[in-house]
Length: 103
Image (cartoon, rainbow, N blue to C red; front, top):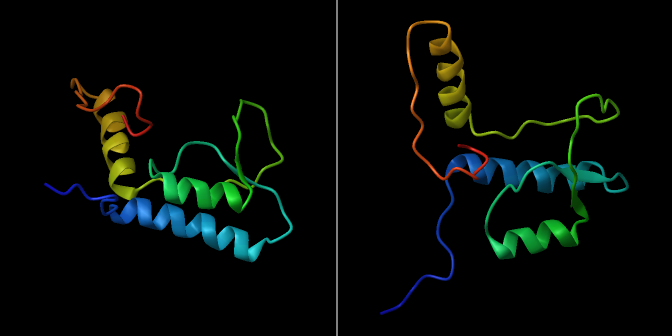
């Protein structure tokens, strides 16, 4: 049996990683921070680290950042639906890993 070293990525993850890489190209001398783990892939994570894209916690009130939201539009659509349904007489149930950012 052979196990793949890496698996494919959904288009939302590919887009987020491309945006991070492009940010480094466009702003070679600026600090780049990542607020959440973009991908759980050690090769890509290492490359982001080598590009000096640093993890940072964003707290309420911090204002000196230009934030680029790389959230997959399919994930955003789910959460927008949840927000819409909260206003009605609905209960939304999300199935996923409880500590995963998308969940």
